[in-house]
Length: 320
Image (tube, rainbow, N blue to C red; front, side, top):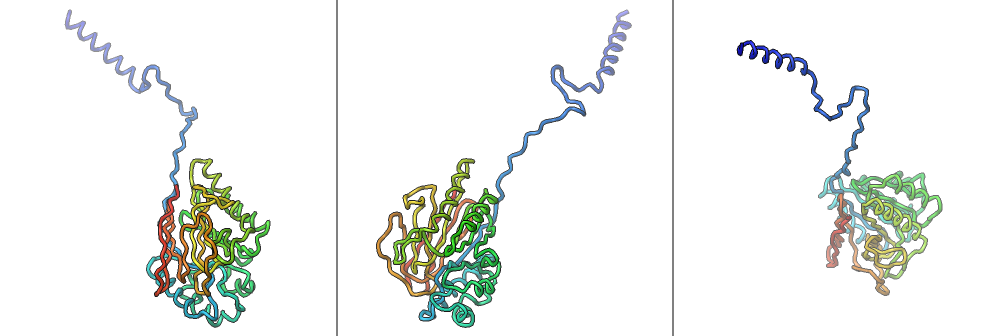
């Protein structure tokens, strides 16, 4: 009898096992059917990581009574371009300085910064001393042809913007605003000839305040999203080198402001400083070029003088 009951117990267990096969839902846990929509949590997309980008250049370059210095700075540019794969060159206006630009197309500029070794990797900035049609024929899209000298390009984690500061119009400011809106995750490096602040003979140029204003608005918009972007400006015009601490529109120190470099050191006759402005961190009356390394979260800078000059300036700007 015990044997029969044991057999019946085994049979009941076997039936229960068979009945439960295929049932995988744990008790009290909802399992959606094929027709039940499943809400997925979007993955957080990290910002892309770009390789470092190396730039080198200056403004105020070719001047007929200073032919040797333009040749020496051109050699520095070529050295950087040869040393760093993928590096590019830039100018900051007054590529021809105080002489008819057409003459320099076949003489001084052509034989220095206009050499093919530099020109093939050169992004130029226009200024008032240059005949616009000749400038655009020489540089084309890399000089802002078709847009009054205004153009931009992606440089890794950075947006490089070139502007015609001799003709700051409502249209050019609207163009800049749109460029910044289309590149919300980029640090910004703006290049134009005239500085807003200067300790030098030429002083500052108030019309470029509109450029600064749009860049600062871009910075505020990014901070509201929880990120901080670098805002940097490269200028020429004053024939010397000067670097400022980050500033606001009124020239007051602001950790979230714009860092301005004046690099009018490409070869034209140098100019003295008149009075040191507030927040001027480094000044040098020397010919040379500025090398910048643009990284994902920083910009490294180095002023490289021509042989015979001892002035140097270097450092790192952190973007966070």
